[in-house]
Every structure is written in C-alpha cells, then in structure tokens.
Image (cartoon, rainbow, N blue to C red; front, side, top):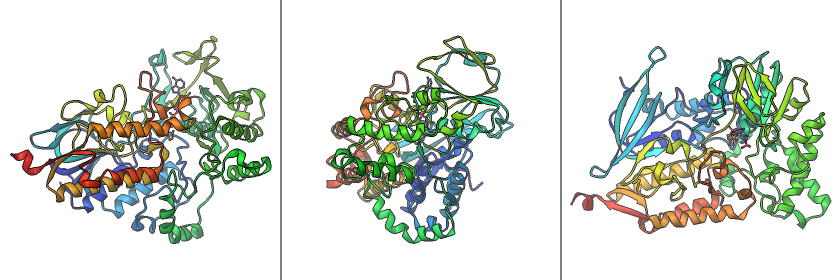
Length: 553
Ligand code: NA7
C-alpha cells in the first residue's frame, strides 16, 4: 500500500488546513521527507469540519487563497465570499495541483508527541479511526526530526456546561461537528451563540424553520457582506493582477488589499466623516471595521461615532422595537469592532419574521435544558426539535493543549496553564524542533489565514534548511526571547480598546483560562520584520542551538 506511512520522517505536519497544506508542500519542496496526519476525512481544516448551514468565509476573494501561480492561475472563484463547499473544492484543487494526497493519512489524530532528547526526535502517537462499521481505533507510532502543528485556532470546540443537557431528547449539535444529515426544514430550532457561526446559521435557517429562537448573550455588530458573483471577466483580471496585489497585501496590517485610513476621526469635518463611513459601509465586508479612521479601535470617542453610524444603518432594517433594543441597543455593549465582527446577508431581516424570536440571556439566562427544549430563569420553557450550539472554541490555544505534548522537561498544557509562552508565536522553549502555525501570540486573528500560513511556513522552511546546512540537531527559543516576545505581544494589545472587551481574543470565553492577548496585534509587516530579526547571527541571539557534534560527544 503506497499510502501506508513510514514510521520515520524528517517532518510531520499535523492538520490539513491552510497551514498544513502549505507546510507539507513547502517542506517537501525543500527536500525534507514530510508526511501529514489529518484527523478528518478530507482537507480544509475549519472548512472541512464546519459544514453547518450557511458556513461561509468572511475574507473576500482574491485575498483568501494561497499565492502560488500554479494554484491561482487554474482556479476560478465563484463569489466574493466563498461558501464552505467551494472552500473544500479549493483545498482539493491544491492537493491535486501539488500532488499532496500520497503524503497524507486521513482519519489519523495525533494524540501524543514526546521529545526524545537522546535521539533528538519527536515520537508521535497516532490514533487511526477505523471505517464506519468499526467502532474502535488503532494506534501507531511515528518518529520525526521536526513536528509542525497546523491545528489552527479553532480545532477544539467549546460546549458550555448547561444544566440538563443530557436530558434533551431532540437533535443537538455543535456547529463545528455538524452533520449534513440534520434536518431543519419545518423544525423548531434553537440557536445558542452569536459569533460568525450563529449569525450564519440564523440567516440560513430562519427562512426554512417552523420557528427559530436565538439565545443571545452579546449582539453581533455584524456588517453587510456585500456578496456578489465573480464572473469570467473578474477572474481573468484577477489572475493578471494577482502577483502585484500580493506585494500590496504584504504591506497592510491584516494582509488585505486596503488598510486603515491614516486620518483620525476628528481630523475631518462631520460631512467628510459621514461620507467616509457611508463609502466604507457600502463597500461591504470589513472595510467599515479595518479600513476606517485609524483611531476607531483606539479612542472611545471615535469608536462611539462608528457604533452610532452602524446602529442607524442596522435599526433601519429592523421592524420590531424589542428587536432594536436587543440587536442594536442605544448604548453599545462593548466598543465597536473589539469582538470579531461577522459578515451577514439578511441576518437582521430575519428578526422581522413572526417565527423568529430572541432571548436576551443577560435578562433571562438559561436555567436548564429539558427533555423537550430549554427553560430559562423566568420559568419560560420553549420546545425545540433541534438545538444548534454555536458556542465557539477553546480558541487559539485549545488545538495544541488538547494534545499531550511533552518537551525536554514539561508538557505544553502545564507550561501554558497560567498564560502562553512562545517565541514569534511559532515555537516554545523546552520544545525543540517543534513549530506551530496559526497559533497563540501570532497574528492569527488579525491576518488572513493563507497569508499567515505562508509567512510562518516559509520561516519554518528557512529554519529547517539552516539547521540542515549547519549540522544543527535541535533548536529552541531561549527563555529570554520568550519573555521579550510576550512583552511585545502585550504592548500591542495594551494600545487599543480590545483589552476592555471580553472576547475569545483574550481567552474570556473559556472559564478559568488565563486572560491575556492570544494574538499578535502588531500587524503583518512588523511581524515579518521580527521573524527576520530572529534569524540574525545564525539564530544565536534568540535561540539555543545544539550541534550534531556536541550532542554526539
Ligand atoms: P464565537 O465567535 O466564539 O461565538 C461563540 C458564541 O457563543 C458567542 O456569541 C458567545 O457569546 C456564545 N456563548 C459562549 N458561551 C456561552 C454561554 N455559556 N451562554 C451563552 N452563549 C455563549 O464562535 P463562532 O463559531 O461563531 O466563530 C468562531 C470564529 O470563526 C469567528 O470568530 C471567526 O474568526 C470565524 P458571547 O459573544 O461570548 O457573549
């Protein structure tokens, strides 16, 4: 069986999202024997798992793709914001073009990674899920010199411990574990959560459900998506312009084709301000969030104006006064844009339907799930056929801490129990030759997935090549470098209004999780500069290097 993995590799890549496919391709290209293990049955990472109704990307094409000409020249985008199924097809296109399939084992979850100091290698334990008729798993072991965890920022889903959950007799499913068999048409549906997943489910399911109730803790200051078709003409032009656009993307904060407006909110007249708000809002997407006046996410006074503009636009679409109070209250529940803004298509209009209701959990919290539905503190029990848990993830760190990863003297879960310690959001002291992509203290939530994956993947490739060329057996960051990186990450987070808002950006959504910035907020250009600086002087300023000769003697 040519697909049967060997038990020794140079590099093992864990996870098949953007980070994984890029790393597998790139490391293999550099001449490293590389293999990928993916827990799911297909590629796409988030886009494989999150197959709930309405799942859609909210970074626009052409930005949301890898930069390789052989990929984009042969691919046609259909819409400005791709749906989940199109993303899965795109990942298959990547795997076909780059001939990745032969080096991937699916339904294979890496559950343990132990560093063997004597042999300078990682020992991985992999659980292989058997075919549908078999219920168990078989376990195998693989060894590798380097491991790259591409487990992403949302691979460990989160279900709050609501009382009585087991007693519910209907269908209950988390959006990240969705099964396409779940029927919603004509059903009584509950949705808990108003992040990107909740907003998309509500928009898609309200028109077909018999009745839908949204359980909301925080309203989402969602922006109109401005969805449109990408026709032949657009695709043709995009292919011509893409190489140039990629250079432009490297200069912007998030890796978009645009950046914040350099002016401040009160540098301009009221008319000018209004005109810019109007223009950005009408462009659709996140222009009104990440293309607006530079002080919007930093100054409360500026932020209030942006919120009021958003509110006016939103309430114009709502017919019921009680919905206005819940979805777009007069006083902002938190600064505009300091929680992840979702993009919507007709989300707000759903609340004009008589079949759609909204429970404000701040006023009437969930007391218990019952056999037939959900009972809130007021004593009101609503009956449901389906409960959709759109309750998010143990974001950014959960994908790594759920794996038993042991380095030279500790495991990652213990090391990060009271806070995350990394260097460049890619490595951690005490874990030699271990890398992670799209993880904590990296630009993860403030960069496009593909751009972050490529930037980090290239850096890791350079590092492995450097080690090979210089006879370096193992490399890990110094503790000092981690301390300096943490300070730098925290400084970036101190600057804006983000820190005053409870959100998964700071780990607030998981009870007991240390509160700190889980993301690097300094922007992609500065991040790239920091990554390059770390390589100076043969990595020796910020890393501990063990040479082949030293280790053997
Ligand atoms: P998110 O954005 O983390 O959203 C989870 C939602 O679930 C959010 O609205 C939470 O309310 C809500 N939640 C979480 N715990 C509870 C409890 N205990 N009770 C009620 N409601 C709760 O996850 P998504 O899947 O929507 O999106 C994840 C990312 O994917 C998104 O940010 C994009 O990057 C794409 P809260 O807002 O915290 O009050």
